[in-house]
Length: 259
Ligand SMILES: NC(=O)C1=CN([C@@H]2O[C@H](COP(=O)(O)OP(=O)(O)OC[C@H]3O[C@@H](n4cnc5c(N)ncnc54)[C@H](O)[C@@H]3O)[C@@H](O)[C@H]2O)C=CC1
Ligand SMILES: O=C(O)[C@@H]1CCC=N1
Image 1 (cartoon, rainbow, N blue to C red):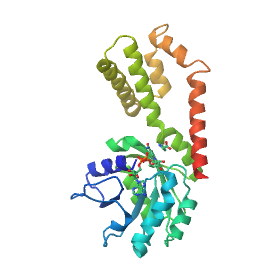
Image 2: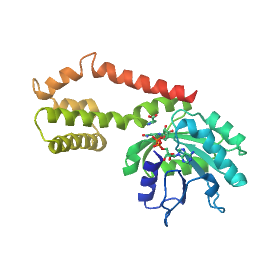
Image 3: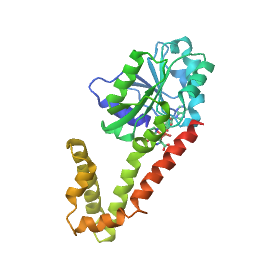
Image 4: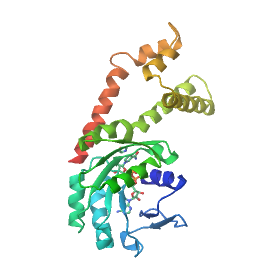
C-alpha cells in the first residue's frame, strides 16, 4: 500500500519531500531518498508526518526503530497510519515508549491510489493539530478522494468496503474473464471485455448522478439477457446474502486486528 501511495505522490504536480524507509527497496533519486533501516535516515531530516504502511504486526518495531533514529527530531511530527486495525491509542503508546508523545491519525486508503483514483477514510485523534490534519488530508487527496470519519471505530467498516473493496472488483474481473474463456473466447478478448466493462461501469458510477440501482435497471431489458443473469446473482442466497456476509467478515477482522 505504501508503494501505491508513493506512486501517486510522485505523479502528483507537487510531490512532498519524501524519505522512504523500506528494507526491500533501493533507488534514491532527485525526488526521493530511499533507506533500508531507520538508522540510515538522513541526519538533517525532520519529518512533519511519519506514514506507517507496514503490516499491523510490525507497527511497534517500526515506531521504536524510527523513534531511536530520529530522537528529538520526531517531537513535532504526527504519525499517519494506513494499517488496518491498529488503534490510535496503541500507536500513541508505542510512540511514547519510543520517546515521542505525538498525535496519531489513521487513514484507510486503497490500491487505486497508485493511479490517482484512490479513496481513503481518514480519522484524526483529538490531539492532532489542524495543520497536521490538513497535511494528512492533502497527502491522501493527492492520490484520490478523502472521506473524513468522526469515529475511529468506523474505520473497520471503511476497511471492509473501500480498503479491501478493490479486491472484490478484481475477483469479479477474474471470474468474468474465466467465464468468457469457458464459452470459447480467447484469453485476450475475454480479458479486454471484462476489464473494459468494469472500467466503463466505474466511469458511469463516477460521472453520472444516477443511483447504482437505476444504472443497473437501465441495462436490464424485460425478459432479456441481463434479467437472466441477475435472476441468478440476485437470488436471496446469492449476492444479497453473500456480499453483506463478506463485509461483516472483513469488518470483524479489522476489529480483531485492533485488539
Ligand atoms: N494492500 C492494501 O490494499 C491495503 C493495505 N493497507 C495496510 O497497509 C499495510 C501494509 O500492507 P501491504 O502494503 O499489503 O504490505 P506489504 O508487505 O506489501 O508492504 C509492507 C512494506 O513494508 C516493508 N517493511 C516491512 N517491515 C519493515 C521493516 N521492519 N523495515 C523496513 N521495511 C519494512 C516491506 O519491505 C514492504 O515493502 C498493512 O498494515 C495493511 O493493513 C491499507 C489499505 C489497503
Ligand atoms: O487485507 C488487508 O488486511 C488490507 C487492509 C485493506 C486492504 N488490505
